[in-house]
Image (cartoon, rainbow, N blue to C red; front, side, top):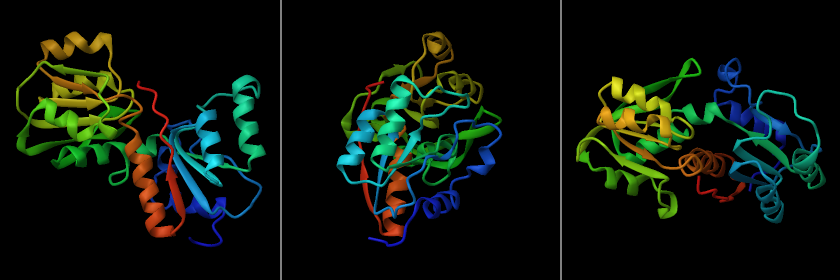
Length: 257
């Protein structure tokens, strides 16, 4: 385990490879330290998708001094310290846990990002940015060396074998091209249709996009918002363990959505 790791040093470490400043104008989810500790040394980092009380309790039980999440507590607007929001923050303060959140910069990162890891799991090649969202392309598209069925694609990206929210086999039996945007990006299926892609992988489904995919003959997998975004935090966790030699633990709190 590394020594002398404090929240400010860990913040510098994360910012050294996650483009937090580059997303500052378009991502208002307060990337970085959201709740600091009292300055104590951090000996273990827990990693999770969402900031919620169950995750906080499990991080405390694991002895973590920092919790790194994809979905934090703040989303660009003032929030009263009351109800559940107060209880969550109070718990972090009472247990001296630093909360660190990274949203879009973690989706987009070309190596440890949710979309890059999904693209790698699928076996995509000739990878390039995809998806006009928030004035930046945070997803990726590419081609398969060997054509892939939609069922094979599902198996490759299913975390712990969990079933996706929805599978929509509206196109070819064998896919030679694919685009990926994790989380809530159902409407970017339109861009996949425009670009003539065979398969589109995202997190959430949408009633409104169903017939557009059907008529556009696009295969689509809605893998689940949670399930498509475990990959980035787990990749960052591995980097921390390898480069910082600090204890790490992934906290799995699936929503099924």
